[in-house]
Length: 161
Image (cartoon, rainbow, N blue to C red; front, side, top):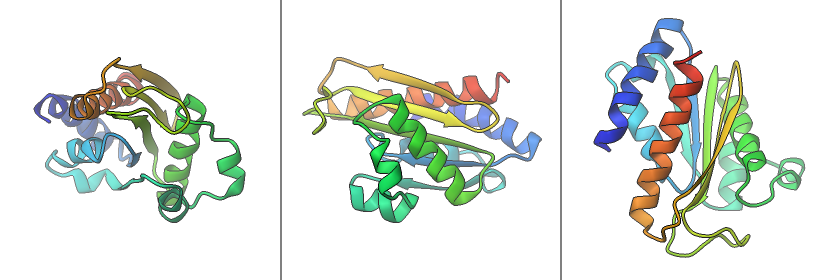
C-alpha cells in the first residue's frame, strides 16, 4: 500500500485544486485503488465513492449495467474496462472515473485470460486504457501490481494533463 500513496497524494491535490471528483469501480485489485485514494487527508473533497464488483449480479446492482452493456463486454479487455469506467462515472456523476478488471490468480479468468492479467480504464476529460500482464499466478502480488498500474495510469491521465 505504501507504494501507492505518493501517486494518491498527487492525484488528490490536483483533483482538489481543480474542484473535480472521482469514482472507482474495481475488481481484482480488491479495493486497493479506493483505499489509496482515500488515504489522502481531505479525500471527501474529491472521492465520491467506489464499488468492488466480482459477479454479474454486483455489476448489475452496483454499476447499473444491463444487457446492452453486457453485450459490449468480452472478458478482460480494454473495451470492458471502458464500459465499467463509464458506468461508475455516470452512476456517481463524477468528473473522472477509473475501472479495473482482472484475474489476480492463482487461476485465470473464466474467459480464458491467464492469471496476472488486468485491464484498466480512466475516463473523464480524456480517456486512457492499459493492459497489465504480470505473468504471475501470485494473487497478492498481482493485486498490488494492478493497483500500482491503475494509480500510474490515473496519475498520467489526470495530473499530467
